[in-house]
Image 1 (cartoon, rainbow, N blue to C red):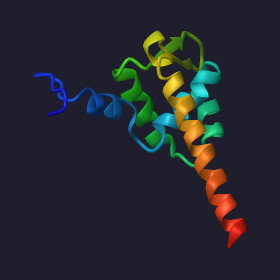
Image 2 (image 1 turned 180 degrees about the vertical axis):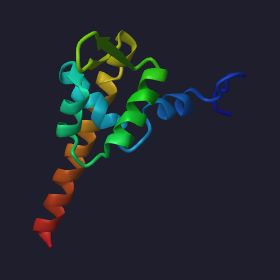
Image 3 (image 1 turned 45 degrees about the vertical axis):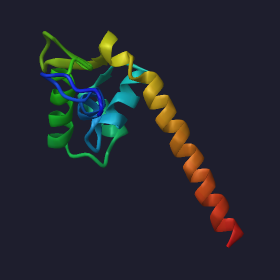
Image 4 (image 1 turned 60 degrees about the vertical axis):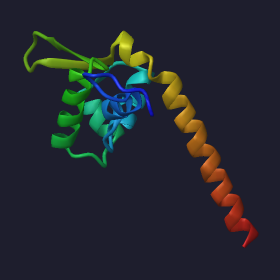
Length: 114
């Protein structure tokens, strides 16, 4: 039987729920590079709507993966960054990138063999 915590359930399910969502891994990837403003993130991930980007950022903030800093200016300047906890996702994301690159190369190699 898999490990179960009385409050949270299986740690794998908890971990996946924190970073699941079509755009969360991409958001985390971009924030691993540097702190970003909302507009920068939207330009870097143009396929995501502003509404969904906002929602995913809020969920990442609620999970303590992303911090949101508002600077008093007109218009307000808002920056998003990974928290110390959020930076712990870097090795996982790097392994996902490696896995994806390997799969792409394998698929491309298969196409050449056909």
